[in-house]
Length: 99
Image (cartoon, rainbow, N blue to C red):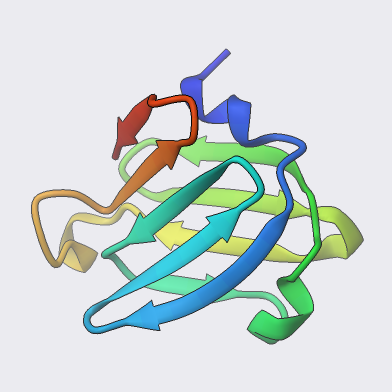
């Protein structure tokens, strides 16, 4: 089990661009994304969708598979890094995961 599997079951509450990164608010965490990000659907269609699966391809991709076939993809490719990390997950229980 990966620490990010704790995201499973959480619902997307907001997806917002903030300056040079994206902020994804979930029901029990938030994710700051600094690398290239893509959505399978318009961001407003992601709201209230639950995370059903977290797929990690080392140094390639972090994929959040949501209910209704929706997908959020975060690139982990070296050429897509804009800072020291690709993303940061802050769980409301205090746990922080940096990738």
